[in-house]
Image 1 (cartoon, rainbow, N blue to C red):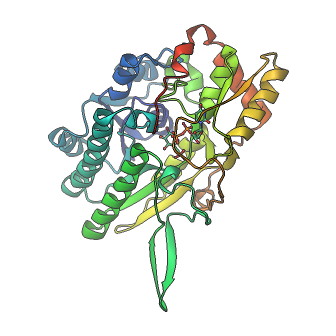
Image 2: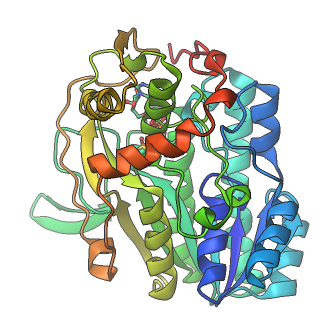
Image 3: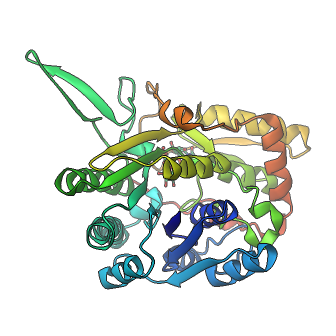
Length: 382
Ligand code: USQ
């Protein structure tokens, strides 16, 4: 396969490049370094020193002889994106080229406008580039479980059959996002569903929960290949933050009551899910939706798990319940269906004590780089 990975410098983008390249596919990685630049401006840089995309591709080639082609450019620039499609004619495009942070999108109107513009125009451009460049190309878009919110009914895998006044139809599962960022993901889904109906695009939408971890088989070959990893309030996700907080001797920041429940997965499983979706693509005219998680935990359950393992390792972990800066339900029903990716062949890595121990061990190697000021920035949803 020839695979175009948009957002190739990010936490998931770079490991995805490695995963496909290692398996013999031709990989083209694109990024505009938005995330890197924003992290530097907001004083919340990666825990691990990460060479830029061009340098990392060179390191990978030196180590393995495999080439990842890299272009630095902006997917919201349609001429640039179309020229890439025309040059490479990809079989699959993986779309991570979005502003990925819910807190970032809630900082102020400017960040909200950037998120809206960046995320929607990038998705629109991909739909057009596929139509004009190669209508057979399969689009894999990273969506989010946060599109569904926390409804008081079971969350189905993308679609819901409704019977109304004696008639039946199937619709996208109702969406009620909890941040402006998550709202752009809802709109992305709608955009792609629209163009799937209009033009017969083939699309897989991966509704992913918060990802954790630093280790993938390919990144483990050399420290310089590790993912761009955040633990700050803006770009860090909860489990990654808690591990770094525990190592730094900073109390784990449970927001509000901590009964908020989400579906989590190991970064290794994100790689598997994207790969399984690419090798078993959607049909023309199909918007295929998978709920991408392997197990659900409340924030309190995560904090307790990390405390148990951390204390055993000698970290003396403290847990703090702080006022919730977000507007979200702190007690809610949560029951998600997620069989689609298991049926494609996903073999989950669950959050065992051993996985947590190895996560502590890698994080500890970078302890001196932890910037405690990044843990709390005071971004409020209210
Ligand atoms: N939380 C805490 N303490 C913290 C950080 C988070 O209690 O220090 C809580 C939040 O209030 C929330 C839950 O943990 O209830 C998850 O927060 P998060 O920051 O891990 O995840 P979120 O902002 O929802 O976004 C992340 C990714 C996003 C992805 C999403 C999947 O940044 O790209 O779409 O996870 S999901 O959460 O399922 O929507």
